[in-house]
Image (tube, rainbow, N blue to C red):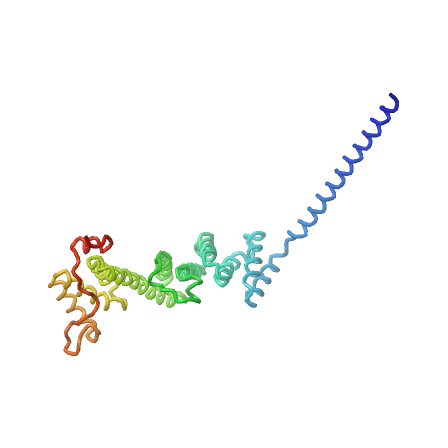
Length: 292
């Protein structure tokens, strides 16, 4: 019995030692982790973050600039450099090709500083980010047909630039915004023209006619109007709508007398449509159902 009792005492003592060792080890690891976190999360003075961000931007290191600006906003949201840091963050993200991030930063700036003297800049950058989102990185290096892309972001950019011109007509960014709005309208018109060409390739002339008319009615100052008038005249002729064809040709001659659609004698002789004997059902269904 004595031997068993002694063994139990020794075993209990050993277990207590193991438990103490585990507690000491866990405490040491916890203290080490806290010390490591304290070191990683050491907060620098506000001016240091700002100067680091400016230096990084001046050297073209926009990743580092964005990191410092994020720290500045996190630790000093109402500090001396808060407003400027928000503006710089828009620019840093844009230069870092984070277009959606730049737009989000511009939205945040406008929400927090609606009366700021720099609100025109935020509006301009928001529009610029949307303007380039449709094109994307691929189009910077590969021949992408912009007219065939979804124009959703272009319309958003147009709204942003329009708001800029309405609210700040004398802004230094207004002239560029105005030119970009013209470019956007040209792109949207080209998109309609792209659709009209597609319908012509499908011999869906009613749909092509509708697209051409939309261009003329809504984008009358764009370069796409000349081709739209040619398509309009040709599709009207194909559908035996003589008055519509005559009016379209007259409008084309008045606005584009040197159009390639006129021959040397001034006669309308385009070569856009290929007349084929197709069923009426194929024309009405835009050529998508085929002939029966």
